[in-house]
Length: 204
DNA sequence: TGTCCGATTGGT
DNA sequence: CCAATCGGACAG
Image (tube, rainbow, N blue to C red):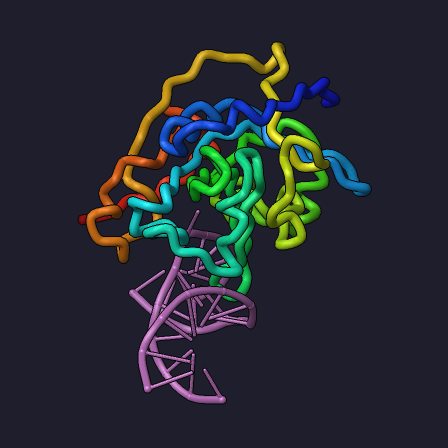
């Protein structure tokens, strides 16, 4: 399927990360590469708020070589490498200099599914989980600091033929049990009932 | 320079 | 439940 995507403008990202995260749901992440275009609806994400959030790489306003991109202008990509083998992709929110970001955790594929399967080596699930999203979409460290408002990797409004009603649910974020009180903040957002949303219960 | 560990995933 | 796998953060 070939869609006419219209790119989200910079001002869309210029707000508090916890407000931006739910607003990104049902929008489209697009990546155009020489191998082809891949795209998917954002169905799950998480907000990370540097100054006040123990789970955030920029907690307390900390700046390191790795997290520097979080301090960039709204609409910047923050990509980091973790566990010695995985990439995670974030969208920088808020004003430049304020380290807010939204981690993209799951997509519903809508274009380039064959290419995604190729990149994923036909493993399933295809685009559920932040590292799987990066692999399927061809996102790696070369995209760290990239401008989503002017490059091959960007967010677009959903094409009209894909518009559907949806409900937003929240939960604590995944994999941040080390973060003290922040582990309980309800800053994970997802489209209720969408089959591409990850399920990972926390016993507690 | 040395140690510790992770915003995960995939296989047991 | 646990191993894989290694760059980054931080202490010394």
